Structure formats: C-alpha cells, structure tokens
Length: 299
Image 1: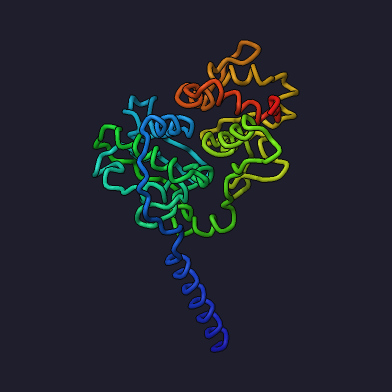
Image 2: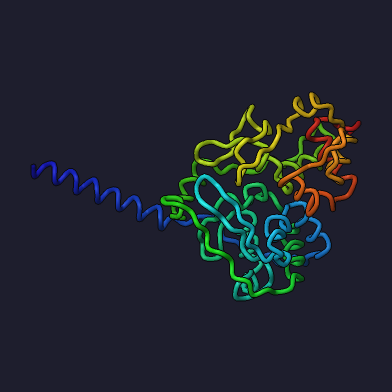
C-alpha cells in the first residue's frame, strides 16, 4: 500500500511539475526596432484584404467599425472578437507597434498569452515589417470607442489558455506564401493573398477534432462545420473547374458576390466580399482567381 501511495504521489508531483512548466512556457519571439514609417492607406487596404473589418465589427448589432463583439460559436465554446479601436482602456490604444506585430504575426498578446486560433494569425506570419508598419498606421486612424470586449465563453478545458501552447506546438504551421520561382508574378501575388492575408483556407478547409486545419489533399476541399453551423464549398482547382468557374467569373464574383448562374454568395462569404475582398483592385482579385484555378495567365 505504501508503495502504491509513493507511486501515486510521484505521478501527481510529476504531473503538477509538467503543468507548471507548460503554464510558464514562454511563447513567441521578442521583437524590437520596428521603426519603419507606415502608409495608412496601404495599411487600410491590407486590413480589408485580411478581413479585419468583417471580423471585428458587429454589423448585426449596429456596432461601430472595429469595436468588436462579433459572436463566433465553436464546438469548444463561444468567442467574441475584441475591440481594435484606438481606445486606451478597451482597445489597443496602449499597445506598442511591437505588441501589434507580435499579435498579428505570432498570435501572442502583449502580456504573453496565446490567442485562440479563431484569430487568423497563422496566415499573417509572413507579413513584413513594412506590412506591420502600414497596418499600424491605419489602425491609429480608427476613432477610439470605449466599448469593452465581451469575455470569451469557452468550456473547460478549452478556457485554460495554457492549453493553447500545446495546440500551437502540435498544429501551428507557417503560411504558404513564399513565391514559387517558375510561376508568374500574377500567380504568386494570388498565392500571397489566398494563402496569407485573405486566409481562404480558414473556412474552406476541413478541421480535425482539435480544431486544426487538415493538410495535404484535404486542403481547400470545403468544410461542413463552420462556426455557427455554416458551410463552405470546396475551392480547389478541380472543384472550381467542375462547377464551371473561370478566372474572369471568379474575379467578378469576388467583387460583386454574384456567381455565374446569377445567384449570390450568402452567409460569411457574402460579408467577406462586402466588407473585404470587394474593395481590392481588379488585379488582385484576378490574381486570387488565377492562383485558385492554377492559371498562370501567361506569367
């Protein structure tokens, strides 16, 4: 009996030590020296491409731009997008540009805590320092709004943020935005947008039991389990071609939300176009379409 007790005690001590180590485990890479001058207009364009407006503005509830409060129901609980206005008390008014860069590229809060991956930071990891400076300049122009963010309502054990460190170790992957040398400029621009800023795979790729995107052949094959019960169709080359999409028709739909058969995008995709992709240039929308259809457009 004493031996069993000693073994149980040793196991409990080991487990407690392991838990303490995970809780104390620092994440992210320290940043400094982000002193580039930002272009607010380019930053606003990049913010549109990245979906910031749609995800952080509660249009249904009449919320102010970027004041947060958008409800996102998941199998692990309910998330609410935070206030991103320049308010010091409830927004990001007290952040530094380094805090901002660490959040955007690494998914780490100013106090070192991991963000839930509903925040699409995994797609922004290759944003350059200039991209960050431009975004930061744009966000400085957002009027402050003293609207407190609603607390995240995750069920146990998903409400324990230290567990996200294990999730990151197991599933976090860098964005696939590096240019492919034998592809043309248009195709590679589309790759940067689709795989990075526009984070198309966030909705159009199925997820595993842990909420991580599946990889390999499952990529861009659609999802029947979007937050809130929505669905997203497959947008890989084979699926798009089978449904008759062309670069022209897809680029047009990304501007207007109107499909070739006269129907319209609904749900979250409608919002993506209305508040984000629809503001991009015709060249960028065609680049996205070319990449998804794997059409190099003559280089």
